Length: 85
Image: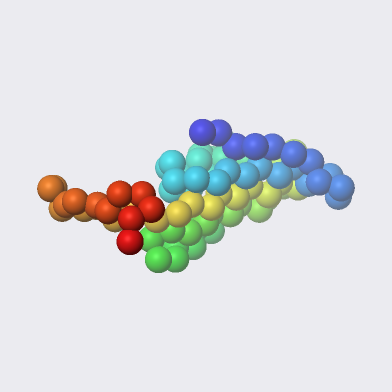
């Protein structure tokens, strides 16, 4: 999954991604191209990564949020059927 890009009303180029894939590594890749230092924040296994920089005179803000992966279940664990109590 890639980034979704837009330009806000102030002319800032904004990129964002939501999901679990990559855990924000795409922002590290952007920093190698655009410059700047990404900020990684982890919370309860999930988190977000943000990069704010200026590239060729254009302000850029790129961020990714991701959730923690689902907990692994022991092999053979029986789960209740959907709607069961």
